Image: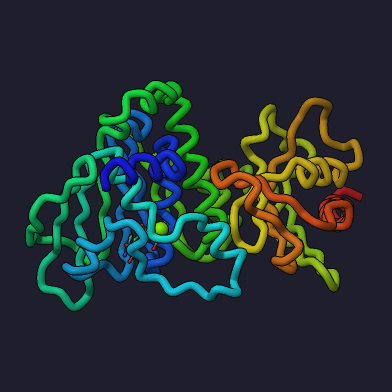
Length: 323
Ligand code: ADP
Ligand code: MG
């Protein structure tokens, strides 16, 4: 029912950024190589995610909004993946329950696109339209029918920043995919999709800044730590330049952040936060990503061990060039 969908939506959709996250994940699952995210009024008035993935045929397109409709077959032993995705076949139904959604999609074998409109969970008759290959999902007037939730949104600026952060992290976790992130006013950043993380960071922070970043590369029997870390002079006043990925997924973990700082061995200016994009590959059974589905907090069963390895990897990257 539509009420059940609205209640479930509370779990999945708390703000524009949660829609952006779910829609990008779907685009990546669809094999997209180009993803464009457009935000109007911070995504509250409208957010659009357009991809060049496989698209949906007419029946998939109408089914996509049914709760628990998922075309994805999950390996039930792959618990980490299920847990990180969190919601199986719920995202689109949940988003559509609390907004007006227009889906336009076309597969490579179809001569026309399919357009589906859903408003407050009610679907209008399907239309055939001209469309490029792939999928475009427009979400407008988020929470128009749930005023209580609308009230919890912050300013346009804050909501936009949260969505942009989601796109940044997706772009960093998939340097092989070209991302464009724009508002109604201008393009915020555009990544080339050439597989190079430094190129992604250049799109986010500028070429000059990205050039200076140092390579992190440390492999132990238990962990593989790779990525880029800023020189001490590249410190930031906020933590916004800190990006951690565990087994390919963007996550947060304060202990790891502190381990990175420790790797600087007091060379970072007091009060400054390091800039980095660090990717950690490890046994998924030693990671608990289910602490909070939205904040993507992660817990490690061998935290001290992980931190020591990260601190050493960062120290090595810095020592190699600074000594
Ligand atoms: P899930 O991703 O867990 O399967 P969703 O509600 O996010 O559930 O999506 C429902 C279904 O809609 C997906 O399984 C997929 O078949 C289809 N779908 C959603 N977004 C896209 C997309 N961008 N490209 C192709 N298919 C999509
Ligand atoms: Mg999904």
